[in-house]
Length: 296
Image 1 (cartoon, helix red, strand yellow):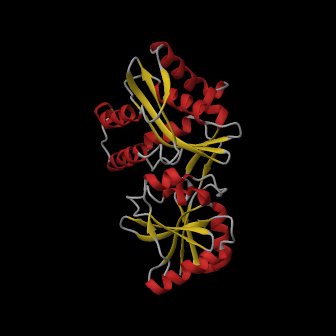
Image 2 (cartoon, rainbow, N blue to C red):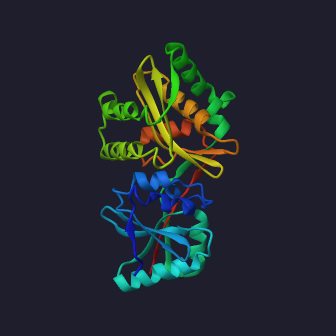
Image 3 (cartoon, helix red, strand yellow):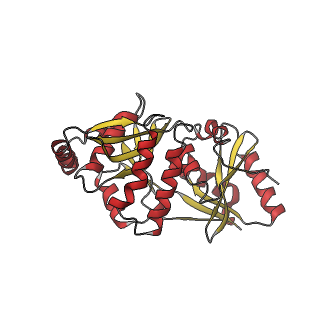
């Protein structure tokens, strides 16, 4: 059997070289996302044939494997996964597989592979410069909201999360639900995971920061850059400050992008209608589908 270990803050760094080598631009293959959702999915990992093999348990659905990543040939890792499922008697199923991986699995398993996808889990990909400046006619509405925020809050400034500012950032998330009630189970779950990621964000080398308005924090974001893409894992803003979401999108992008950052991945919408509307309003250049593959 594959000797899986739970993902913890003590071993998380071991995953980074493999995750940073992935070319898929989906959030599921970033250290921040893996760590953020590790408890919810009972995430575990192992290094097999110089490939990172991860396992996730979906509530009510059972055990799945994440498509292996690393610089070595994926075949040996897939061989090991097949042997593991045969020995343990568990189904051979893969979750959140990127399109490139799905093609490999289809070629390997042929008609035995049953492939499905779901719009709710597609990631939103944007041009990085678009979310910094909101240029042109297509961003007229977003730019107006941003200008309104600056006009109403002339003292607003972006503050990076450091050892000194981390307590204030954590307090913001603790108080957030008083301003934005979490009336759905998925919202409450996401908030819990956001707090866990923020608490260890510095140890995980995440980029994080918040907007301060005269001593009051009104928005916060956490993410990381992998290759040419900035991934935004957490994005929270107080809706009683008009334009605060446009402000944190723009300010965080300006702060976090690096010279060779081309894209920003703002992750999926989990099927939430209002969140979908919002993310579409920022004009994504692409929705990145993910696939679930079960092998008979």
